[in-house]
Length: 259
Ligand SMILES: NC(=O)c1ccc[n+]([C@@H]2O[C@H](COP(=O)([O-])OP(=O)(O)OC[C@H]3O[C@@H](n4cnc5c(N)ncnc54)[C@H](O)[C@@H]3O)[C@@H](O)[C@H]2O)c1
Image (cartoon, rainbow, N blue to C red):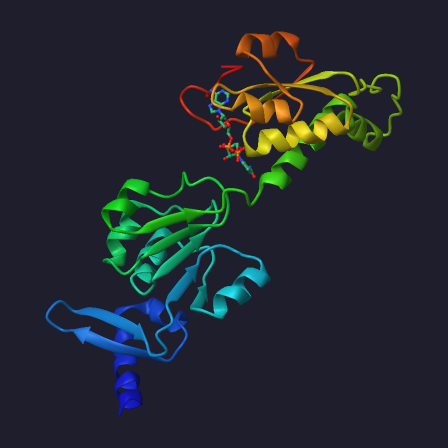
């Protein structure tokens, strides 16, 4: 009986909401005919999670143990707005704008937005709060990757890696022009001594650099424990051989060095 009802209603549901077909079955459907709104509940009472951007296979497998997972990438804003009313949770990276319209379209069903990564600029937090939706991120997810990338840029800059690569690929051999400078004994100023900045500092010390940091909010004892001197902005800029920026983009930090 339930199966027959579901089959009959699924046609109506597909008709009213084209994104239905992407959801895994079985689902128990009910229709509020006065408002012509379709409510879909999972018969196994698992929540439905929409994964709107590519995630690692291991993460998806974890999710699948607890939820019906709908991986739909490259949705247009209209497609996302349509789909979201069928979902209890949404997972995005930085490429999907979770706008006010998304929360309005969810009509209260969306309970949590997960940002797989650090920044949450692409999620309308005010709208999420107004709609009673939790927003969570993974603040340490990319810390080491970002720090390693910072060190990669630092060493590449010191030794003119990109320029010499281009030169060799152009058929030249300009070894004297691109010798660069040594990092050992040089002073690195880490601007923003948070998670990424402190990991950069640790690695730079391993390269034999002298590390100073500017961060008006960082506790001095944490810096001292890492062997790093906290200094003023002016001292950092005037003393450093290299400067690495790791503070968030705010009106205060925007264009802090250049216009
Ligand atoms: N692209 C990526 O993959 C990636 C990865 C990780 C972090 N990030 C970005 O890097 C930045 C730092 O990340 P985090 O995880 O280290 O954050 P965090 O919050 O741990 O550290 C930021 C630090 O900046 C400091 N700060 C704030 N205003 C400052 C100012 N005016 N001058 C100096 N310091 C100031 C804070 O006190 C804090 O210690 C964030 O904007 C984050 O979004 C990017």
